Every structure is written in structure tokens, then in C-alpha cells.
Picture 1 (cartoon, each protein chain N blue to C red):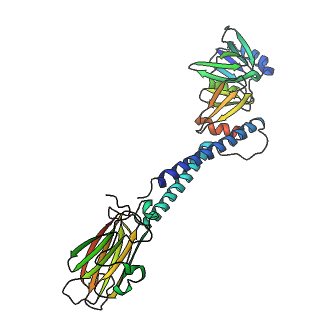
Picture 2: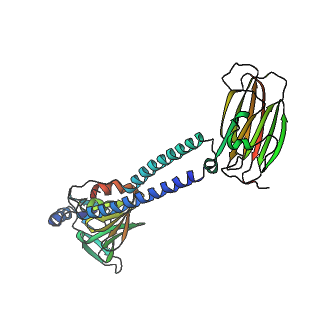
Picture 3: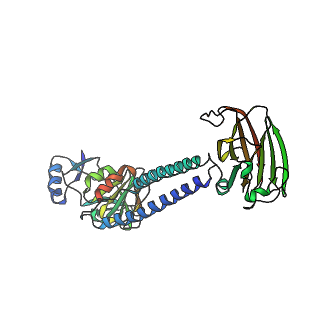
Length: 150
Length: 236
């Protein structure tokens, strides 16, 4: 059996040992995820889109995450990465006080929003700190307003 | 007919007002939310989103515009059933005189002939109308028409009544008035004038008794109508 561990770094080693002693293999590509209650990731394992190299990216560096078909693209600084988790899984793994879902395909770091452009419809256009624009869609419009109290 | 401007001008104004209102609100709202971006913890009054303001402002402005146009239409209707503006700006007048009232400048006019006027005679039922139409352009000093109305019927009529109306060329009423009860004499004289091309319709009533009805035509032993085509510019 293979399990991916999604726990805080302080408990990672302890839990990893317990599971391995019981014959459970730890694999970051596994479909089953064991996560900690109220425990949010501080880093995530992603693959560099350009080089294909696997790296650990701090969640503090993430600007936003978007999906293209089956691909989940993580924008962190000037580099883009591919994540193995689905977007809805990342929503559960990342701290909701720092990350907010703004559409069916985009998750943003709330402190990385540079500018908000309102429209005459139920939509906002956000300019992120790396210059990319993302849209808050109708379904997430009120959620976004409540979060930022606007 | 109510001027087309009654509809177009308020609509244009309403649209401009809506655009300006929404644009100003949009600018203020954008500034407000970007301020909130950097200061989420402070307590502030939340502004409604622009789409709600657009819907609300558009609704209010549309309702006010419809009310405004309705009021203008009602007033135009009360002023003559949709007359064009030029008829409101024109002048109309006529007076009715007994023969012994044709004094002063009126004494210059005669049932026989009048210089500068073309003479017409029409026998209509029991009434003969000898009328004179000015051959000059309209001016404030000379009447546009003078009509001598004689009863030539066989009934013993005692007094007469009249109703004079100015009408547009297509028959829409502009203004009018009437009276009844004066004694029948050789004739009565209608002297009138207008500054715009129109028709003067004179309804003439003769009564053989003193009895009066509610309407001017009630009890009339004889009633006839004549229409005079008035053209103050005297174009051919």
C-alpha cells in the first residue's frame, strides 16, 4: 500500500516511521493521502515545468495555482511548476487564511494580489504580484467580497 | 402632434445621466476596494457592487423618464389634442358686431366692397354670408376677413347665436368661442384675423323663441356652417 503524507514537518518523520514499520510505503505520487487535522502544508512537492526537476516549494512563494485541463500549474515567482494534487485537494492542504479559491480553476495567495479591477458584471479582474491577471468568477464573487470585506 | 423632441431629449438626457452616475460610482468603488486590499482589518462601510448600482440607477432613471414624458404628453393633450408647436405660437382673433357697433375704424368697412379685400357671397340654407378676404399679408392693423351674415329664410327668428372655431388645415381644433342671444338685425358682422394658415369655421344659429337650451344649438330654428380658408401670407 502506498500513501502520501501531508502533515507538518515536525511530525513527518514520526508518522513516516510508524507507517513504514507497518509495511506502508510513503510515496508522493500515491492517490491516498494521509493529512493532519488543521494541519496545512508549508511546502509542496512540485515539478519544474521547464526542467522536469522535482523541487519543494514554500507555500509562502506561491502566487496562484491554476488548472489547464488535467494539469495543475503552480505560479511561484517567475517559475511555473506542475503539482500532482488536484486543485480541490490543494484547497484542503493549503491554509485557507492565506489562500482563496476564486474560480473553478484558480486558487490565489491572498497576500499576492496587487490590484483589483471591478467590472459591471459579477466579476473582478485581479492583477497578481507577478503581473498575471486572473478572474474572480460569478460563483466565487460574494465569497471574494466577504473575504476582503469589500 | 407632440414634438419628437419630447421623447428624444429626455431619453438622451437619461442615458447621459446614467452613464455619468455609473462612471463616477465605478471610480469611487474601484478606489475603495483597492484601499481595502491593503487594509483588510480596519472596519469600513462596504459599498454595493457596480452592477447593483447600474440596475438601481437605470430603474430609477427609466421610471422618472417615463413619468416626465407622460406628464408632457398629458399637458400637450390638454393644450389642443397634439397640435404642432407653430399653432401655439400663432395669434387668432375674431369679434362679432351688430350693425350699429361698426364704429370707429370698423365704420370704414362695408357689406358692398372693401379696398384690399376680395368679395365672396355664399347662400347656405337660410343664411347668406357676404365675406371679404384680405389680399394683403397679415398685419396687426387690418382684419384678415370680414363676414356679413344675413338671415334670408322665412321663419320669424328673434335672435341668433354663433360659434367660431379656428382649425388646422387637417381639421384639428385650435381654439374657439361662441355666444347666443343677440337680437336679429339686418346682419351681424364677424371681423377676424390670424397669423397662420388655418380654417375659420363659423356655425350660425337662429332662434324663433326665447327658450334657451344647454347647448348653443338647442332650439335653433335654423343652423348653418361656413368655412373660410385663411392664408395670411396670401400665397397662390
